Length: 211
Length: 273
Image 1 (tube, each protein chain N blue to C red):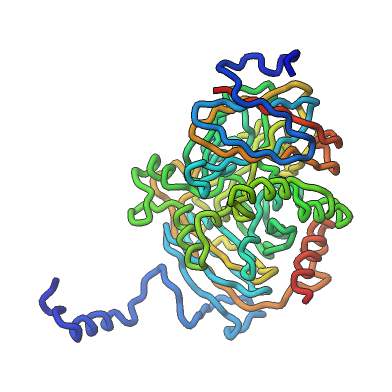
Image 2 (cartoon, chains in turn brown, yellow; image 1 turned 120 degrees about the vertical axis):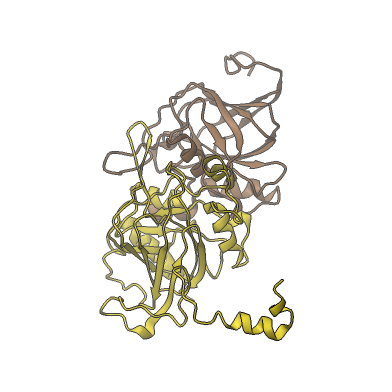
């Protein structure tokens, strides 16, 4: 991983650097002031993303509070990720993708049965990744709320039609998140193969944390 | 303390003298309503209550129950939480509700979906059409910024803390106040993602009827929408509920789309025991 430009523009020493395998969960603590860079290594890989306050994990990322505060459904550079109690948890300080999604939610075995049919119920899904990671940390199903989907594209048309469509990311594109409080980041590297969110081919992503 | 209430008998008489007081925002027990649909008998009425401006309520509703919400004066904002009463870890999933139905704007005929791929409730009638799946509840911090105070004990309570009290009365807690659906106050989404609010005030008396597709715990708060920049503006919300039949196999909402049909199949599977 040395001979690449994935760390370009990051300041501060790298304190964590990890590849998250395709289809896998990931959980990591990021302290206030640290920056997490997510690298979409092969392009158009949805990264389903939740945040919990490290000091009190009943406080967590709130898509609705975040949307209401910025009066926009898209997450862009400058978006402040708010908690369910209205406090800033992280800020998107830079991103090479125009915008990211926070209305599409996470795929689950159960919602797959609605969207595609009961033949997909046995496929691996993001909610199972969220559960697996959260259960290791004392959280459970009640703690899974509307999430962010980095590198995923969910437009709303004039007639209200809403759907996951072809991505606007590309290999090597990134998003940088500065922690505004100590947070636990929980990620599902999305395993979905029934819609374009991963280009029908789940791929690894890279997580770089700088102090 | 007033001297005349210094002994318990006087205090009891004082308390009992309030009997029969009628205010705008209160439950009616036993429930009574003179405007039920023609095919509903008064014996099937289960709930009649007016929720105060800034107030909240929570209640268990049986499968098949119809819940009518009326925006009495045109400025109500009903923020809704829904749980499977038998297993409250199953709750409304707003993202799945809009994604599965390929529709950002729930309205008549839409189904409110749980995080277990099941139909929780259907919007059986809707003459409002302005609702909001995106902006959620106000919180203490946002109300403090807008009104100077957002506490339950003050004049400008916030929707999240109202929902939290309603949920707590069914044994639920802070982890259970999930992303909510706002009824009567709406938003539209512009092509660039901008949230365009539709906040009224609207005509008095707009209504919406929900049909419970499973045994539910309902929590509803009636606080100003988070994007409402006016001075504190909220009016009472009337709720009326009556018993009704479980959704039939040929129900037009159930059969409208393949996704909705599968949501009903999943709910029916829950009751197959």
